[in-house]
Length: 243
Image (cartoon, rainbow, N blue to C red; front, side, top):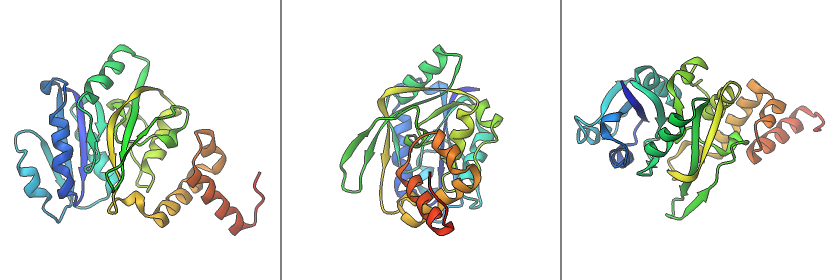
């Protein structure tokens, strides 16, 4: 068993996935203590060729295209790590990410998940520092958060939603104590091909969360401009009075 599983779920991100894997291989953390598990979610591009370059360095699981949430769940079930961190196929980990995060979990038995600040890189290459607010789950992204793997099993893992990460984090926050490292350990790349850059899909995703959780419950876990905008649209549609 490894101390950490780095889980990369990828579908048609062949042009990026090698960069993500290389950032994992560049960790200061002992290479014997972590595995790199790649779930190929039915890619039809050159992902397979790109992954062959890392043969012997990664563990590969290939499945038919089932979507991000189910691909992540497949990886969680296959994980051989006591801890697990998700890395999106188009993002990177900073070299000290695994060392810093495992150190927090090792030292604090009451902490079940640890996040960190991150760099967000726009399509123009501009980098912005995003400081995570531990009291606002909507400032978090599930990739770049390290969990005790058993906790993911305990809450039922991911559900197949557009904002699967917010839904998961609420269920984790309901039961477990988080911690945050005030240092950027994740590099989050924004580009036109990213699912979260589609305004209509974002809006529909928030409507889905409102239907599942209710707006009052979502507000309890933090503030999101997207949530408030979506709720205003719902209120106008249903002619209800906002409080």
